[in-house]
Image (tube, rainbow, N blue to C red):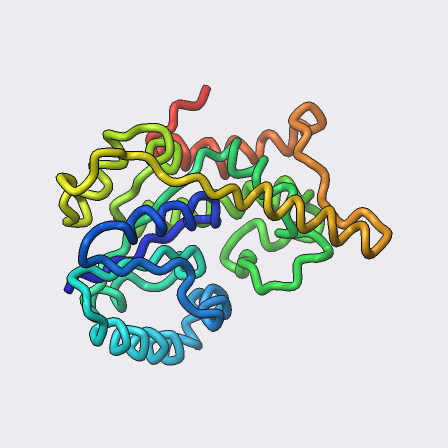
Length: 252
């Protein structure tokens, strides 16, 4: 059985991708399979919890091995930092899907990451990162830029097969190559386009409803590029533009 983990910095288009892959014969594809996966996003980043992470995936692997399919695929952004060595030891292959920094920042800016409403255990710089000394003085934009760089530099250092989100959504040939790279038969499909599933609109609608019931504005403002300061643009250059160029994005 082929076992594949597809992971990314965020959830944009991940549900559409999983629905598309699940239409192939003898494939079972899940999107964020278990609710218990969320804590693994935090635990998988800390060496002191490596035994827990290992045990979690060994249990998941046993469950997967009992499925009646030739290819098991999991599209799960919460597993972006799970060690590839562990996955390989269990017979899994890890693939990264990356984003253009501009569209990523615009999409994540209206969400809760690095706001006062953010109650999840996100990633923060450790003592070895120079940013940690001034973290409390950084703007939210700067923190999001740092986060973009941290995730994508991790992907680059891991030597994962990497695909650009924009290519998969906008190019049938890139999507076909992506599927072929996983060993799936491209001859099964006549149409190469991901199904539309606008979670961004769904999220915005839920936020609006919540704000009405709370009688307050709970949604975050959109990113205004004209309001970005020179020091913030320096962060964008260092933590977004530099890794994005390594990923093949043409950014002036």
